[in-house]
Image 1 (cartoon, one colour):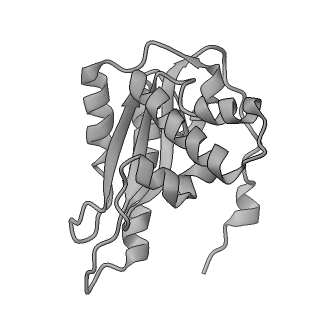
Image 2 (cartoon, rainbow, N blue to C red):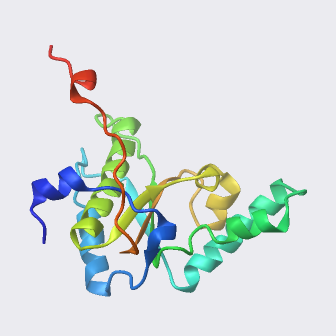
Length: 187
């Protein structure tokens, strides 16, 4: 297992199309989800949950996405519909992070939503530490109520993102990172 600081300094997203199987074992998936649930959570509200898409579930989710896309884009070429159908099929495992808020006198909704984001990042980091490539993604369908309903989200739930996890097929290139002197001030 890599040194924690070095892992955090070098972590980068891997494009799902550059992933292959096998995905995490059941024990590794349990570790990833356990770490995903171990995040700052003011009030102990657990304002998030996870949806696992693996095996045929990835295709079934793609059918939901393609069906909504085709209905909302009646003139779309068949190739575009097929692209939507394959949204979750590149990586062997996709974890949906579902965010919801609970009324609370001391914990605003914003804090609860940030907790869901922290959960997604912990999932990415845990998968990376286990030797997998990971990418936290969204897309039009992550914000479309018809798709969310089709994936089983409740009316008050949002999709914070989908974390795609698999074995990288090639080294991932880093992207330019912010220059600290341009983003850091002192009070």
